[in-house]
Image 1 (cartoon, rainbow, N blue to C red):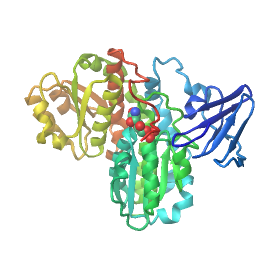
Image 2 (image 1 turned 60 degrees about the vertical axis):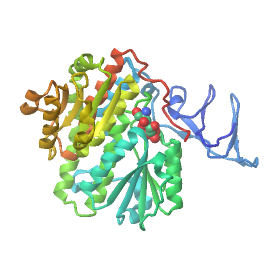
Image 3 (image 1 turned 30 degrees about the horizontal axis):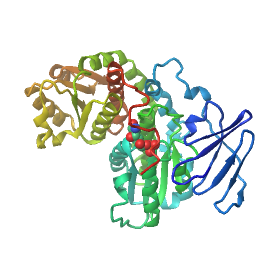
Image 4 (image 1 turned 120 degrees about the horizontal axis):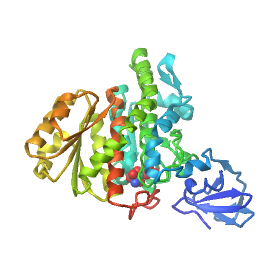
Length: 438
Ligand code: M6R
């Protein structure tokens, strides 16, 4: 067999050898793997394998050990991987920052970016590229970078990146964000960015994946195998690693020790807050039961939570096949308000932050047109409670970390709607976990 374009991995075990395109398919059988590189050939038998170049030159390559455990790839009593992975988030968020925080200094330690640190600490222009849910993590990341650093940060859809005329200022960093590390569009985007002189970083979950090898440095998410096609736990891990990177760079710029310590304390408190939020699952299930028959939904948010509106709509679409639109709430008056009617629920993300009054006014506009509103609001918000049809309360948190909490009710709403509609939740139609074609 040969690798050209798509990933190819050999699994090595005493009971035979395996071939797959994704490590998560292997971990039930072995944690010893060998990654084929582009244009390499492999001959695999039950008890041996060899790798050669296209010109038949033999290549010596040892196995890599995947740290994931076999039980991480099992359902462990959950009905679906999507639900299991949503519930894993208190642990996976912690895994993303475990051993990486220096609370006294208000600064994280990130060994994987040390090879490029001298350039990175002086970087003034950064581009975050990704697809799908990872792209929405990038969109949140842009706001976090703007909050914590002085780096001019832009986001790019990897699938569109190659069509742009790229003209990077000196010392530009392009950060590829990808769960699988194998997404063809993201790989093509970083290849083009490299050609145009950017330094590459990867924020990747799968250790040893192509993006992790093609980049000059990076940060692993350590979220463990994500089996459900709909990405959930990996999203909050990506937000955690993006926050760590922004915090590290911010602390080398204007960010004070007090602000650094405050951010680290808030990150450390997050796993318990997520656990508390997951305690509301049956309430969220009841909301899903009330609305799953509605065929059109709207998700609204502003600033940090605008990308969560996009992600909430994507999650609902992909697992339940319900049509949903995610919008920046300020754009509602420019078009989508025409859709509002009693049959169309709006999920309004309204934490108590600087956007609060503006979101409240959006909710008033929807209610005056008899649209049902499900609010994701801060605990104890009586003004919102009195105004909306249903409320999901999230614990108070620093504004730039609020997406990590507000996304969880969106994930659960999507999951339960799909459950009531009896969809194939872990393998939605027409979708693949790793999109290795352009
Ligand atoms: O492996 P990646 O993070 O690069 O994958 C990107 C998208 O294909 C992925 O997020 C996709 O949108 C998911 N189905 C979303 O749940």
